[in-house]
Length: 141
Image 1 (cartoon, helix red, strand yellow):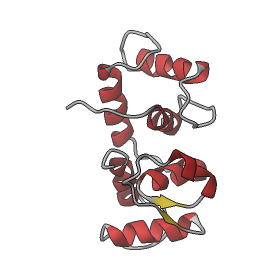
Image 2 (tube, helix red, strand yellow):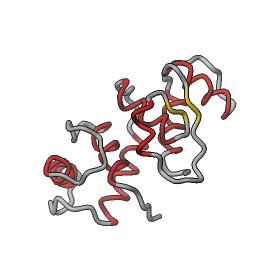
Image 3 (cartoon, one colour):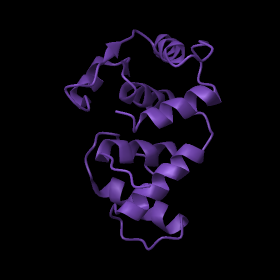
């Protein structure tokens, strides 16, 4: 299966996996290319520091298979791409005009709404079923 993703989503996945430590802003900068190269090396790919289809496919599957809990900033961006915004400053990153965005005052409120919407137990916490659903939602929109 082939995936097509934006630079912002590439940075988000690389940050989630621990390869990228810069600002997740969608700019394909030097830090992003270094992170791509490190991911490629650690994954047994040729280190080109550029995104190709093989790298995208492996990055996405590695991202989906990882089960660790993420930090608040990355969780906020995962929620954003699922349509649950908790930061007015993220609205400039809106993926498309048809993307319906709802604003929530806190991450737990947004998590609860997301969980209710997909019929999960609405705890407002980032449990593994919620995290997997958020990661899959990165490509649903």
